[in-house]
Every structure is written in structure tokens, then in C-alpha cells.
Image (cartoon, rainbow, N blue to C red; front, side, top):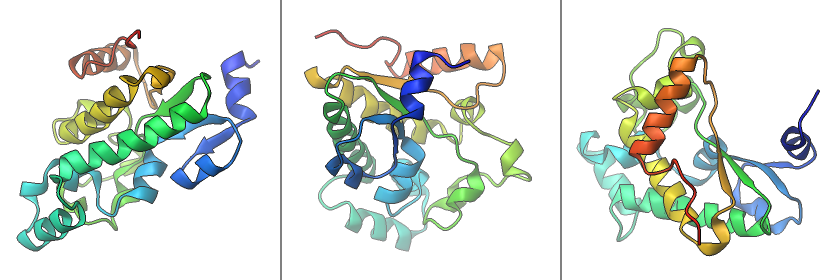
Length: 190
């Protein structure tokens, strides 16, 4: 049995790249993993932890980000995409799925060495357990900042969060706390 939200997602597109905004389809789910994969040249950790990269990689990412510091570039770009997608929904909910991919899916990106190696990534840090891990915290904070900034727009209060891989009640409590720390527990009213 499906509920109305599941039916909407099943009959609409999963937003994976900004070029989909040219289509007239309703967005059922905004995949943060796919947007980062399609839009950014570096591993998300490279934007969050630039000073931890090798010197040549630091130079490379700083040059790619233009006048903005890498973390600000990441947040600004993601915010702009979120705002466009939220406006495209014409008031309908934009469900944004936070990162849920395993670490092995990003091994080809500059900065992947900053992500701790996992023996079995498919069974390791995914979803909430990843966000709660200290190694991932700064990257998670950048994603949350982009969502928070996007929600500040009057036409963007339709952004809802989808949290992948909530495995236990304890993890459900953890994600509520983590989102509260980032200022994302309540959707602002205009």
C-alpha cells in the first residue's frame, strides 16, 4: 500500500542534474548525491576540508572556485540549484534526499583520501551513521547550510528533507539532534 507522497514520487522525476529544470515535469525527489556527482568536480570533503589536501590539490580547488573560498563556493552553487528546483515546483513539495551513497562511489574524486577507508562501504557509514561521524561532519554542515539558505527564500519554503538509512530509533533521535544543531528542525514561515 502506498501513501500519497509515495505516489507523487513514483509518478515524477528524480532530480539528478540542473539541466532537468528545462523540463516541465514535477520533481519528485531531489537527489543530493547525484547533484554533487554531476555538478562538482571535487569530492565534497575537498570543499569542506581544503586545508587538509595536498598543496597541489589545494591550488587546484581554489582556482576552480574563483573568488569564493571552496566551502562558500560549494554552498552557494548548491543553494542556487536548490532555489531553482524549489521554484520549479510551483509550491509543491521539493523532497531533498540527503547523501546516502557509500564511500566507494566517490573514489575517483580529488579529495577522496580525506574520507576514511571502509572495509565494506555498503555495510559501513551510510545515512545517519555517516552524518554523525566526526570525519563527515563538516561536509554534512555544508549541505545543511545550502538547504537552510535556500529555505530562506519566500518561494522556497516547500523544501522538505528525506533522510536515507535511518536504521534504528537511536539514529532517528540522532538525526533530529544533528539537524537541530544545523538550524534545520523547523521550516521558516514567511
